[in-house]
Length: 507
Image (cartoon, rainbow, N blue to C red; front, side, top):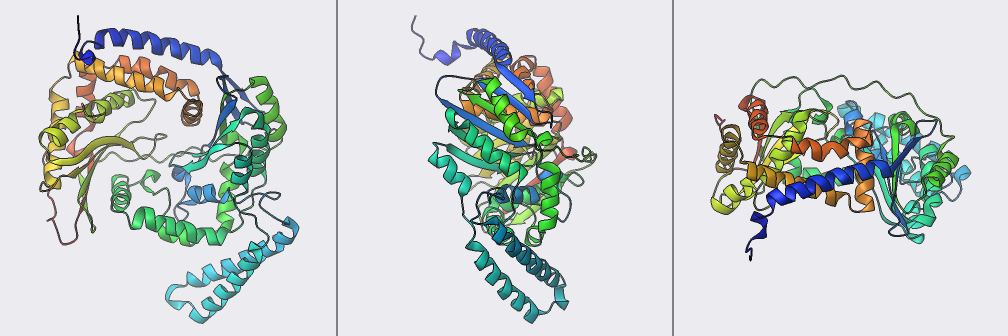
């Protein structure tokens, strides 16, 4: 028999196959992944894969924007930049000569900040004089600095993908290396953890302010998203932008940054995941040699602030010289809450590919939207938001897109998804789960992420099993419980002097 469209023939067979495959894969992974914790608290998670003589390394610190305090927003992101600036032995031509210059720079920069903070009472002539003096000292200091040292070492030794990122929940440093260069990594990264020097601190503030102008202030989507989060969260620090508020960046102090660094960037607040051509016993011995002597730090107590239950719809309109767009966010629980898994299924139903409900309805059939989808934000350590995002297609309006979103939400609440469609979604999620673990980097990313997030990397192995338990009734229950008017924040971007303000819609 010739089957014209195989995808309609697969579900029953594919589900059984993927169930067995993912279950076997999970069991195989758990038996192959090794873990070890050094006496100072550094957690090491390893998986041998001898398919190529390489290793992918993810080093994650459990620190992000959510750990910052008012007045120091952006400090975690700032430190991501600063930890590329070297150590007492790296990126310096002569640290003994450099130290007194760094002290002089700090003295001048602190005095300049204090004068600037006087506001209307500041002495402009004094400020200009201090700026001139500071630039001269910074010019002298630059002669003693070597830039991009970490990148150069890794590139010279076959490293690829060297990068770092800061989120609300964590800070991550990434590299792929030939496996016979693992000791180079341990040497460099242990020095970066133990002996960082925050050189070029005040020039980097200007760099980050410019980054903020490009990514946020001059970006319509950046402005909309930032203001959306600030409105959606009234108490929880998820309301803060990862890059920080402009005035906080402008006057961020080196002293506060060094304190934040010492508090959070310690071995007992870090996880190292290594996947590839390694020998776990040798890795443990190597990391003990380079990291074992670094002392742990006393970590702050866990965050106690919880976002209060939202009692009514919040709406904001952002005017910008750009095409309109829309964000609608609903407060929702995070892992290990069982409803977190249900939202994974709802996301896949609504916006996973060209067969998803939002694409078919808003983009393909009604043709009212140029784009329509869903995502979770801004983190996963704490309860977050399930967000609908869309942009109208001319001549349609953002109001039409919003109304169409609510229509799809009502369908989720009232019309149970068919077993066939649910089965298809489960297949997609499980296939994506397996694909995501195919590369060394993908595996290292997953196990380090869940170790930092939940304290146990095994958490993600249960994901396929929990997804398979979800029923059509679960989807309707969760949609009714969370996707309600009183629990939503609506942010609309409209052209300046363009569309009229939109009114609340009673869905």
